[in-house]
Amino acid sequence: MDLITPGSGLIFWQLFGFLGLLFILIKFAWKPMLAALEERESSIENALKAAESARNEMANLKADNEKLLAEARLERDVILRKAQEASVKMIEDAKNDALKVTAQQIENAKAVIETEKKAALTEVKNQVAILTLEVAEKLLRKNLTDQKAQKALVDEFIKDIKLN
Image (cartoon, rainbow, N blue to C red; front, side, top):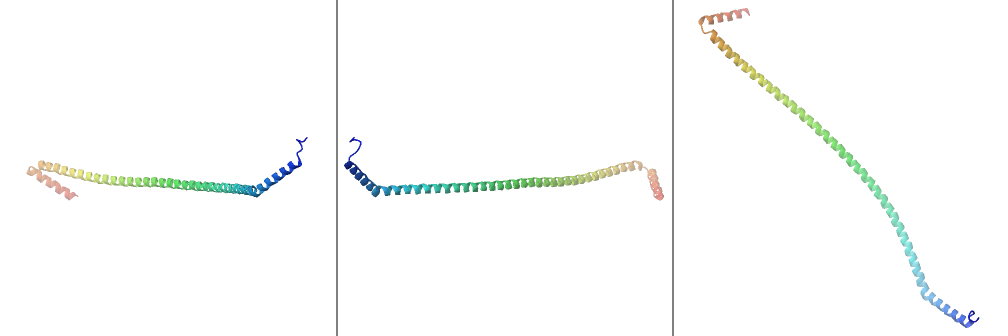
């Protein structure tokens, strides 16, 4: 039973060695270990705070990005609408200008046609007058070659004058 129950001297020396080791650990190792644990705890706490603030900042940035995207979409829609309105206005203006130019060209063409028509009628009248004079001259020359025919024609003209 000697092996199971240790002697009092052994217990004393083991207790003395344990207390000496405990004193040395408390004196030299305990404070640095506690300081290291506290430092680690504070760094973990700071890291958690930084992560939380980063998460909040990311949420804010995401909300800002969504807001900017919505504003950009609205601005794009406004620009597209204005561009569409401008293109419709330009097309309408071009149509109106084309109609005005076409109407002016038609009026000019009508004026040219009217002028050409009058010129042609004048030319025809002149030609008819010339032909009439030529025919009358030929008839008068043929009919008035002798003295008797001339006297009869003059008498006939005098009768017509008196009747009128």
